Amino acid sequence: MYRVCAKFIDMLHSGALTKALSPAKLNLGLWLLGKRIDGYHEIFTIYQKINLFDEIFLHEGPLSVETSTGIPMEKNIVYKALKAMEVKTGMNIDFKVYINKNIPEGAGLGGGSSNVATVLKIINQALGEPLSVEELKQIAGDVSSDAPFFFLDGPAVGRGRGEVLERVELPHMVFTLIHPKVKCSTPYVYSHVSREMLTDNLDSDKIIDCLKAKDFSLLENRLGELAGELYPEVGEVLRFLRSLGLRALVSGSGSSVFYIGEPLPDVELACKLRGWSLYKVESYGV
Image 1 (cartoon, rainbow, N blue to C red):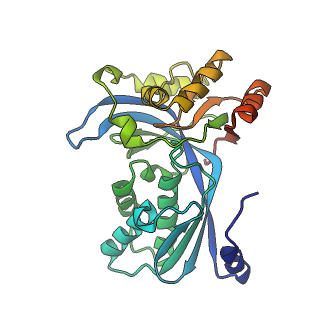
Image 2 (cartoon, rainbow, N blue to C red):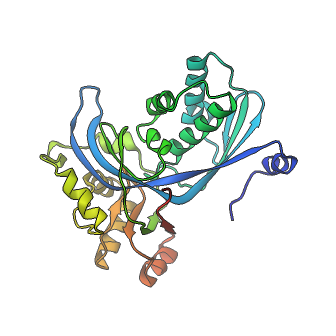
Image 3 (cartoon, one colour):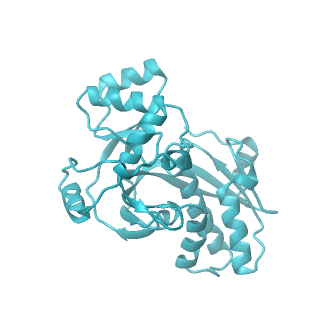
């Protein structure tokens, strides 16, 4: 059961609070295609929401953003997005936002990006929808490349920096997700990308067709492999799962590692012995 700050429980009981769930995502695969002139990398990725959630509470009051993990407000991308929303609309955002973090941070699961999209949608509605969905996506994309995905209802492929999106229909899947309790820095991992890691002549249609047929053999993430080299804890999880014959992949730039399928007894035991967090999750959304 999720734990929530006592003051927000009191608000919830008073009926003065809005509550929403903010889902995590997996990158089922991620391919690096080249370096862009803006300094980012061109990618192709497959996004899938999963049923692991942060809880978001909103209450009327002076603008503030607080998290259960103590992220400084000025550094929180939700706060940055809301300040940009104020500029865009010319309206004051008089809401207190509290985020109960259940999605591990620095794990490649998009918790912060999901928080941005969830909060923007709720507050835009509360203000009478002064902004279109495309305008909200633009604000979200300026603070996080992954955030625009969370405005969609289901899985999608992402191109560009990940913000150029196209919905896809994928079969329902169960995932075993392991978090080795280390945070990965996305800029740090990307800074170590070499030319040899780039994929030329990617056949994205074939990858998607195989995935729809539940053939996972073409899925890969060289950025995640790099994270496994830079962060020993991530590499240890990958090597362990692969020693069991499992097709283990890193989500995004790490640190979470997953495979498609139910948790195996050997995996559950290893997580207990090594202090890794284990989640059994499923596809979420239409």
